[in-house]
Length: 224
Image (cartoon, rainbow, N blue to C red; front, side, top):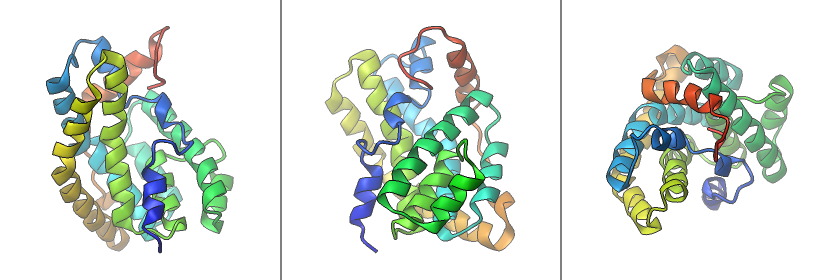
């Protein structure tokens, strides 16, 4: 195992399409719920403890070797919004293309055959971590960092925030990422013993509703 692979996986320059998505931040800005650094912190923390916790547990489970198709179905069941399901599969498809080029692996090829239109991004992320020789905790960390890093970066562009404020926010959230990553690994081990229904199913209704509104907007800077 090389831990340097985690740096590659978490690098924003990995051509996985994440730069085109704001994680709901654009709709929050448009609706007036996100207006500055304080609201961005609340937004990221809320996202981290709801959809982020679910996604990290899915990623850790895939890295642990659970059936990616069962995990993909579990992700579908935990994503009520059609717009968010579409975005998650689009990101998963793009990440899978990058992963197959960087870390060729039979399990990645099998998932590409089974889900030609894309699997949910956290599932692909976990399987990519597994192919790269990383563990479930690594997959959870990468997933959680993306959960808050994407919206923070997007909001810098959307509101012309000082990038240093966004960086400081991510640093303040680091202890929470540590705790949630460890919890995600525990959830993954429980799912291996009890089945995918044991995974967290936290919801974020405003993100779901906002995603549907955002998808209907004629002019958007970000895809989601």
